Structures are given as C-alpha cells and as structure tokens.
Amino acid sequence: MTRILIADDHAVVRDGLKHILERAGKFEVVGEAADGTQVLKLVRDCAPQVLLLDLSMPGRSGLELIRLLRVEQPALRILVLTMHAEQQYVVRAFQAGAAGYLTKESAATELVSAIGQVASGGTYVSQSIAGKLATSLQDPQGEAPHLRLSDRELEVYRRLVLGEPLTSIAAALCVSAKTVSTYKMRLMEKMQMPSEAALLRYAMRNHLFDEEEDI
Image (cartoon, rainbow, N blue to C red; front, side, top):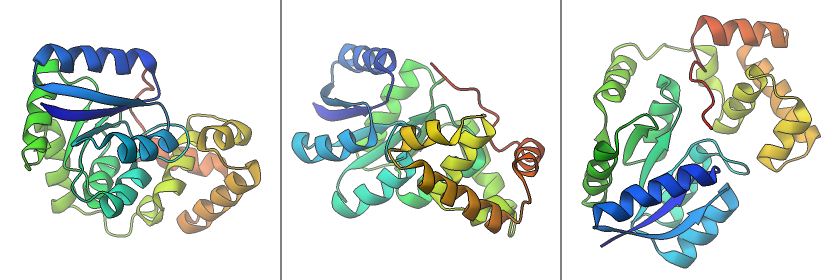
C-alpha cells in the first residue's frame, strides 16, 4: 500500500480524493492537511511516500512547500493537484522539485495512474500540461516581467488580480498586512509597473491567472 498525504484547504475536495484513493485499493491515506503549516508537520509525523499537494493554501504556498520538502524530505514524491493550469505554475512546480502535475479537472482514473507512476519513481504530466512545458522550452519568454518574481510575490500578485484586499491576503498567507505591502511594492518594482491597474492589464494581456477559483 502506498502511503498518501492529501494537502488541500477544502474539506470536500479532501473527502473526494480520499474516497477515490481508498476505492482504488492500493493506497493508504495517512493524513490530511488544510494549510501549509500542517503539511510540514504531517509529513514529519506520518511519513507518507507521496504528497498530493494543492498549490494555493493558507500559510506557505505549494511552491514554497515543494522547495522546502525537497531539501528536508528528498525521498518524498510530490504530485501537484491544482486548479492552476497556467504555464508559469507548471514550470515553477517542476523547477521546485515536483514529480508530477495534474489539474483538478482530471479524471479519477488519471489521478490513480499518476500517483502510481510518481510513487514508483517516475514523473507524470497530462497531455495538456506536457504541451505547456514544451511551449515553455521552445519560447522561454526571455525576461518577461512576471518571471522575475519569487514564488511568494507571484502568489501576492495572483491575489491582487483576484481583487483581494491586503488584509485578506495577509490573513491567507499568515503574515502581516505590512509584509504584504512590502511584497506588493517589491513586485511592482521588479515588473516596473506604476500602478495596480497596470498589474491587472499585464495579467489579463498575458493570461497569467485565467483559471477560475475552485470550490
């Protein structure tokens, strides 16, 4: 039995995933995490073989967690399961150390197959995701402004584009509003954008955050 830790901030999603995995008969769900802090603790306590990880959770983002866990738990296999199909997330996840990447619209059979492949030491990407990776290799976008951002700055940018106020972003990321303001100022400087309106226009023009929020 492959030991699985599910990390997603929506209980209904975790319940659905647990049902799919238990029904497959070859996986044991050893823990469930609802935020980034819980992920780190449960990985240490439950010793999963595979982490099924959402990228957007309260506290540490999924990209930050991948980087941390690749250092702390190098044997852990990480399969991203997220709503984000945008190219910059796919590329950043694999650069951070993920072993696979799926979107939440994937079929249950594909999820089971992906976990099995990742658990056995392989990598997994769906056909549509593979196309995005191929595109990024063929056209790396040079010095596109958003590529200058850190993972945390990109997350703040995404939330600003979604219209979240600084206080809400601070609460979601478990930092102070002042810290979020610093991230905002830094990302605007890196991208050389004079205003939030300019940030929004850039995101829309480059289709950076096209995926709608899931439940």
